Amino acid sequence: MARIVMKFGGTSVANLERIRRVADLVAAEVANGNEVAVVVSAMSGETNRLVGFVDALDADRVNGHNQSMGGPIEDEYDAIVSSGEQVTSGLLAIALRRRGVKARSWLGWQIPLRTDMAHSSARIESIEDTKMNEAFSEGKVAVVAGFQGISDDGRISTLGRGGSDTSAVALAVALKADRCDIYTDVDGIYTTDPRIVPEARRLNRIAFEEMLELASLGAKVLQVRSVELAMNNNLPIRVLTSFAKDGADNPGTLVCHEDETMEERIVSGVAYSRDEAQITILQLEDTPGMVAKVCKTMSDANVIVDMIVQSISRSDNAANLTFTVGKRDLEKAVTALEAAKSDIGFEGLKSDSNVTKVSIVGIGMRSHTGVAQTMFEALAERGINVEVIATSEIKISVLINAEYTELAVRALHSAFELEVG
Ligand code: ADP
Ligand code: ASP
Ligand code: MG
Image (cartoon, rainbow, N blue to C red):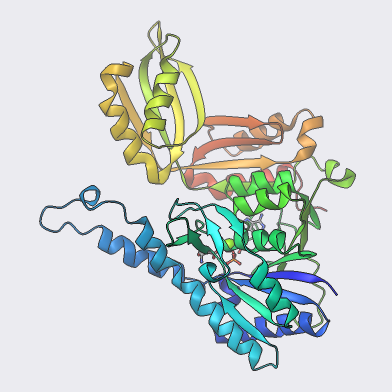
């Protein structure tokens, strides 16, 4: 007998037909004698629909009030957007009962799954296992609403978009599960997003470190925190499809610690993120401490700065500084810089949100040379201009004009021969 956590994403529970299918998959694991906890997402599109309601009311300007006057709304955002998971957990519990499988739904607060107070992007602090273990000993499947918990102030919290992955991994860790299976609409982790490169290839295994980079750099197939948590607790995750035909082979991808075979690959994957925006500060005085001043202005405004490059400008003793921030933060960042203009000392600002970050990732890069050259040649051959570069031991990221996103991803995928196994 094994203890298994099975997680089903939005497309896997998109309608009643899909929920029936999920119930069959869960029932099969129970029939094999396993203890099963299931984590579900909201039906696909549902969380976006709920976020739309919040945004619409949040944008109201009644009687001259502006958003900041009424105070933050993240606590209510959580109360609203967490509701999609409540529906699917209940529906799946019913579908399981009708298949003769004992089951009940669990909301975050009922477990309880405790989080900090960072509403809308809360971090899990603890998961009580007593009631879950009781359910197991009664032979009941626990159907857990993903994405949600209870914060220290006794309110519902959510874990950030895509957070059900993190709910599943955290539950698997807390319950000391033997396996954590993440079911989605693709049959594993691919060398790049199969939606934009049809030649992308499923990987049998991928190292935690690589998956962490791919997820942070835009591959939304797993939430970044879920990978972090799995890596820190040495819990391998299997990513597989809930759309496989009965009896069909469904090996998926195992996300686990690296082994020798993985190191043979120089590059494992290509990721892209359209969530970036670029800011250039023109004619910044080129003296020690200037970049620190800019970074402090950004951190005081709660803006995370990602890629940075400094270039000499036309006049002596001045430099241009280009960096990227999240697209959502662009307005906030520009306002903060304008306000600090005289303190920092610069001539002007340029910003551009029509940019994409494209990255190659691979643990094999640690021990191979010429990777950057191959990357830049592949981009240059297609006439793609690189605005900013950032590197680490196992990744190279470039910022390019958004119009070239797909061309760049395809070019890099083929330059590193990722379509061949
Ligand atoms: P779920 O609703 O099951 O959580 P997501 O939409 O969050 O599913 O994640 C699955 C999607 O991630 C896929 O449909 C695919 O388009 C996208 N994706 C991006 N990069 C990759 C990759 N490298 N491998 C697999 N899927 C990827
Ligand atoms: N339903 C939430 C979202 O769409 C959480 C998840 O699907 O993982 O972000
Ligand atoms: Mg997801």
